[in-house]
Structures are given as structure tokens and as C-alpha cells.
Length: 65
Image 1 (cartoon, rainbow, N blue to C red):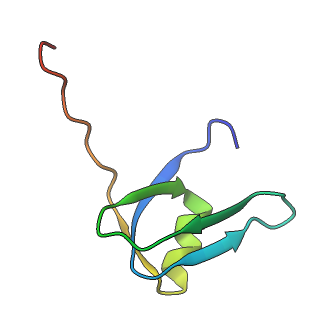
Image 2: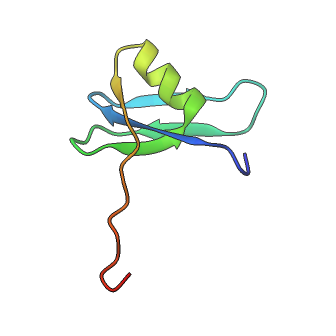
């Protein structure tokens, strides 16, 4: 969805989810680094114990700014 806010999670086990009444589906594979996905997918992954929600990453300032 355009303009949808994103959430961050660390995925411990692969998770798949299809958004109800939509053609959209999501897949996340385990990684030690945080990954960004739509909030509803992150909430689902956390609710089934396959991910841990984390705070958004802070962007590094570019040199010269």
C-alpha cells in the first residue's frame, strides 16, 4: 500500500503471510540484521513467535552534510 508505514523486525524463522482480501503476500527469511516490512506483516510474524520487533534503524548522516 502506498504511503504505508513500515516496521522493523529480526526474523528467527522463515515466515510467510498473505494479506486478507488482497493479492499481496510477504515472505521473510531469517537474518541477524533487522528487516523492514509493513506493520501488519511484522505484527503477524511476532505473534507466531518467528520474529522480534525492533526499533527503526537510524540513518547515518552522509559525510559533508
